[in-house]
Length: 616
Image 1 (spheres, rainbow, N blue to C red):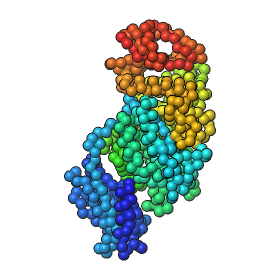
Image 2: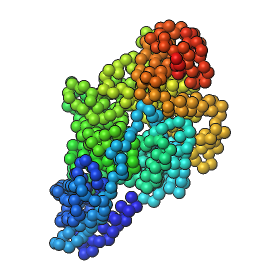
Image 3: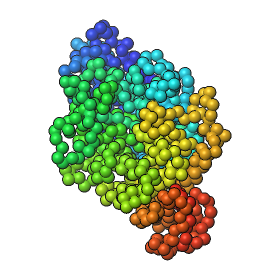
Image 4: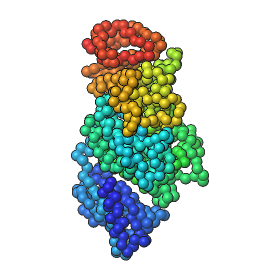
């Protein structure tokens, strides 16, 4: 990105005689690659009166196919073509008025890395660790406050910036590897130059620039390399529904329809289910998809063809630049769904194995399943979105371990959600979670009971799907329910110079924290190599008397999971599970570490999960 800034500076300095009338400020994407299956590229060109210029380019195989203008003379959109035989190099784009060059831009074409198109993404063999960079670790205190950024660090404010950054993440990659997670989902790192609430990253003010309080683009690229060196994967958090009110284009929009506008501020109704509702009214539909998420989050109009291309290309640019292994798409149903389908299709054309998980926050499996790729939707819609978050299962977990057992309460809730998996085209490629950055921490929702927390984690790590863990769960971070997002997203102890406790190190944890870390570490390290969990089928038995039992089975391995949701110890006769157990004589208790010589009777303490690797 530093090279990009230098090029822009050179372009600005080259204006000469016309400097007062024409200025080139930026071209986005700032560079591109050869070798994509789609030869097209659309460049957004911005600068004072740039539309008054004639644009030319002389580079073998890299040509200007079409030039579009809008009502705003400060924008041009260049449709480019990159022929298959085009070589990498620097292509000078020239801008002229009356045959005089008033601006030039050295546009770099790079070669795609070998194997880029076949990059492997995150799968059910992975465990995703979600962290909020501002709250994880402050590795470089010199970037806490940056000239030109309107919000400074104030660690005492739960809703302010606390100073965590990319270096802080990089400094603790070995901690994460040792814990046993295999993929990192990092909340947005892009520039959020907003007066408040900029810490969470979801009010983007520059789609091509890492926020300088986190680091820079090169730092992000190096972080990706360090993650891959440790055998882990990187998932980038993206936002298409809205930008930040401080985005550079908000003071000079390319066209009035770049964002969805109303006579006065109009908030979304947040009813994501309205998109698939066959009976939805026009007003409800418009409020959802065109209403603003918040005052400081202008709603983007993805039906504008230039903005649509801009967003799609931005995703491809980051995948290629940072060697991403996946994308998490924020508020996935909120943008226009036809554009989101095209985005997913374009990504899969360039990266056939690439996984994307969308935040489709709804409470019913059928509502969420509508958004997964190849769903049999009555309206014929195909999202081209490979994965979704399992919000219905999350909601069931917040209740299952706290309720008394009954006909339709308690642990039966987990069974009932999984029993509706026929709604999903691919239930194995669904991300499960016990909490995230938008909800109460799992320990809070489980009434601060570590036994219930362990049950929730054991469940998501052994059932179908791709499990995601929220940072700090391994050390029992808890805030108290309903204390607000800023409090839920608390600092990881030991991530800041001068912290009195350092929970990244064992000696900085109390006994309960050590117990929780060891429990999760044991489970994660075991899960890394278990094929039955990664690719095996699932078969479960209807819960009875507070006992829920299921099996994950593969041709080489079979795993038995028994959950005792009662408040007392239970001894279980296992003859009910004979369709599996008839072929096995012994097993190994993964969490307890002991060998089980007799599978006919199993004793489980209250609120406990037993995971048994069966042996013939």
